[in-house]
Amino acid sequence: MTELDLEAHSATILAADVAGYSRLMSQDARGTVIALDKARSIFRSHIVAREGRVIDMTGDSILAMFASGVSAVAAGMAVQKELEVNAVSIATGHNMRFRIGVHSGDLIEKSDGTVYGDVVNVAARMQTYAPPGGVAMSKAVADGLQDTGDAELVDLGDLYLHNIARPVRMHCLRPAAGSVLSPGQLPPGDEARPSVAVLPFRKNLRRDADGYFADGIVDDIIHMLAGFKELFVIARGSTLGLGGDGVDLRSVGRELGVRYVLHGSVHRAPGRLRVTAELSEPETGTVLRSYRHDGLLKDLFELQDNIALDVVRTIAPQVQSRELMRAMRKHPQNMTAYDLVLQAIDQMFHIDTVSAAHARGLLQQAMVLDPHYATAFSYAAYWHVFRVGEGWSTDPTADAKEASRLAETAIQLNPHDAQALAVYGHVQSFLLHDFDKAMMYLDRAIDAGPNSALAYTMSCATCGYLGQGALAVARGQQGLRLSPVDARRFWHEGVLGQAYYIHGDYAEAVAFARMADGRNAGVAFNLRCLIASLVALQRMDEARGVAQQLLRVQPEFRLASYVQRCPFKGETLSTWIGRLRQAGLPD
Image: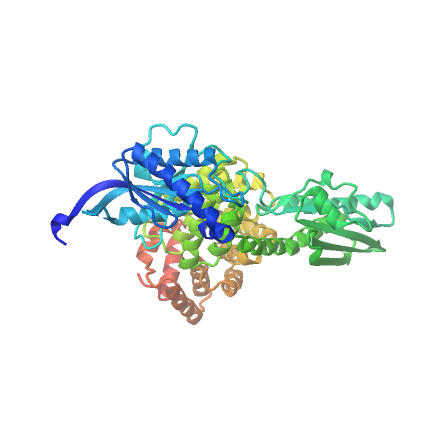
């Protein structure tokens, strides 16, 4: 091969793949091949019509080259529209849908038409994040679009692609809502979260007037459950008349359309009270969790609140664990945005770089699938907070900016979402050090979600940054009290430990930091708090041991770079850094 056989130039690459091709082939190989031939013909006609050139149509993949991004996107959307209108189907009745990625850049072309370069690799990997029926594209391509018609252009932020050194800013062009889904996927906006119905508790009380107590417990349970983003709670009015002895839970499940039912009873004896509850899965008849409370009847209302909180803390982890298993059993083509976010949360809280990369990919898929799902955007913002806080970021300024944008998008999608408000407030304080704005949004988050553990714990962190130790402890305690999910408990414990440090109670700070460390030994912010607290107590040998643990977690940790992003202020900051230095952390 000579230099004359190679030509370097700029171009736009369109890469496409059939969504769920292996599954379609296993169901109906002959029908899939016929449908694929029809789809290839549609691709070829629209590529040629826009002065593009087909490079390859091997297997279920299609690769084409265009002179401009506008032409490539126009061809891609025209193909998707015709495929939708003509409903290229296989014998099983499933439409064949394609994912399309478009990227512009430099490439090398051989004399036989074969092309090479990062632009090809990026386009091919980008299409895996596109929704079936939509087109994913890089920012440079999106910026060149003048008119997207009735399609929706969604900014999904930086895309971290496998074996690509730098992230690529990705946008997604989706046809009109409802036309981009694979078989089995719910339309955007349809409820995919697990639904829970709390039935009226059976009553065995001495006076009819005491019936309000059992009803009050149910009301409190419903109110607290409604504070969790992972659950969809049926209103109490829908369950009236469904409780009592001999209730058929399967019938209740079918009638209300819920996955889970919580039911129970209240018994009162002189000076004592017993409450029992069971969480069941009506579809299978399985009892997932039983709860029983025995206590003295002194203060009805306080007891009512405590029982409701205990029940929620008992059942919420069971529901999330069950839902995570359900999501992971699904075929990828049947995932909803909710399923993807649920898996992303699980990966995020492993607190390691491999799991974090997986979480980011899941969140981006969720944002593509349903660009109106605020939770996906708020967790994506939260992901950037972890990335900076755990020392994984190569550009903390860019991560902070992207976290703020994503959290702001979540608020725009749902202005009263406590989680979105809390994450935005935390981004403002932890990453951007705008504490006034942070407190305003965190207070709004608590108002919007009085049972949101995330809102209280993130507010605890910001109060600590401002040196408000007593308020930080109070809010941290409430966040921990409301946190029912064991997998994330270490985070609430670690932030509360930091609040105790600010408050000057170093023994309590060590106690909570040790608890958090016992649940997850790789969380850098918690290790820093533990080190500083141990130094404050003059337990230097222990502090040096934890400092070595931190350096195993973050080998590149240096105080000089850390101090620039540490959100503490004034004397608190200088004392904090000094204590970390005393434990042997390098400058």
